[in-house]
Image (cartoon, rainbow, N blue to C red):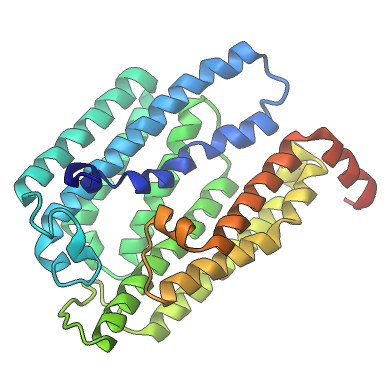
Length: 316
């Protein structure tokens, strides 16, 4: 893959799937039975919002790599990034990042709507603060990243002109908080593995995450909150009002959530790549779990015979 394309990290665009979540749940809940013309009128603004967040995220990666080039050269994995390896200069990377972020904001305001524009602008500003200062503050750094995913979900909801559930915001926040901590553990484990293999490295986490005990505690708390919030949401009065018996079907998918949480933790603990596509390609169990979970969610929400079966089998 060319260096300039790797700089944009297209594999990480999968993280922007959170922009689409509000549409998935709107179609199966409040938007159920909507005319095709109404659905299609919401699709294109949603696609535009997705593109805007992809551009904004890539812009942030470019700026981040430009600022962190010297430190990344000390890391056994990050040293291979285009800027750290010397394939692209920090100045060129920073300029490209700023241009992409400006384009993302302009397109969001001009082609989607004002609320989505503010969500994209807020995301860009938060990323600027993150790169300048917040990424050096333990707990704050990962919380800011998780907040960025919440802005993605809010931007997607605004693009299709629907309200977003506080349940969805909380579930997205704690899930991405957990994933953020897995990234920090992965960095720590990769450095330890390199040292054990005799590879000299002077990289240290600038946030102060230097203890596996600390990381395991943070991952244990955030992982437990992910599972707890998912169960609470699927069994809540809100979910029952929107989906009826289908909400119980969502609750029955909880074991898959737990398996996925464990597989993400296991991979991070081994110090393997935390890039989304690398993770899915390298862990077939995780990939199968996610595929089954997505298929199960879509089946529960959109396949009427399954709803009938759930009504007949389970008490509400």
